[in-house]
Amino acid sequence: MRASQTAIFPAAKCCQETCTAGTSVLVKMPPQGTYQIAATTNKIQFAVWKDAKGRQKWGRVTLDKIKDAKKIDMCIRYQSFAKSFVSVGQWSEPKPLGHDLELIPLTDLSQVRVGDEVVFKVLLLGKPVQMDKNGLPDLKAYGELYGADGAYGLQGMIFKGIAKIRVTAPGRWLAVVNVRKPVNKENGPKELIGKALQTGYNASATFFVRP
Image 1 (tube, rainbow, N blue to C red):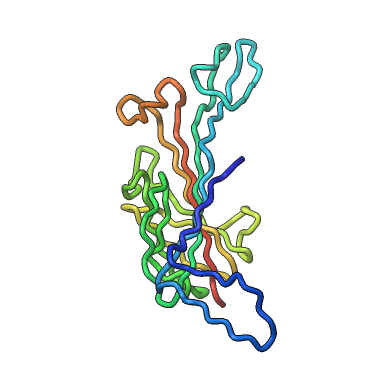
Image 2: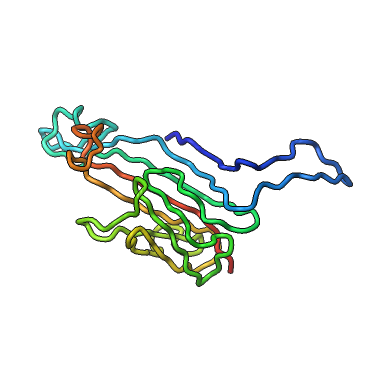
């Protein structure tokens, strides 16, 4: 799986010269604020179906390429987005990058400690994630000392585009949101009609919690 990566440090400068003992090097600091490091996977098409003899098949094919299906269990186009954040001096609220599904921290992630509440804004196609016929979507979070194996973790319901969790352990944490939407003539996307049954999005954000 290939991924495109974007490191957003528009004003940062790096020192590329060799330094020896007793040498002082002055490096111009970038403007204060919050910088985002982002990665995006390619869009992936995946399908699972049963053929005329009831045998299960799967592959990275679009709906119109499946010719022998007795039953189609899944046909989805999927894409993942990931972020981490670096603050220089004073924390500032990060701006949206335009990912299809995106987590934007409303909490100063540079100062999070055990027991603190962490709040994220969750955007789907640029708009706050809302309740649908399947109910309220949720945000899940896992810490390296709490649920790192994925067997358990924290859960915060997303209400009007806002999700909240209260972190319970120090160390690195991962917050994740998964959203699936049906493909139809009413909601589109037009390019997937007849080619997929669902669109899937995964967005994650990593941050560090102090003791």
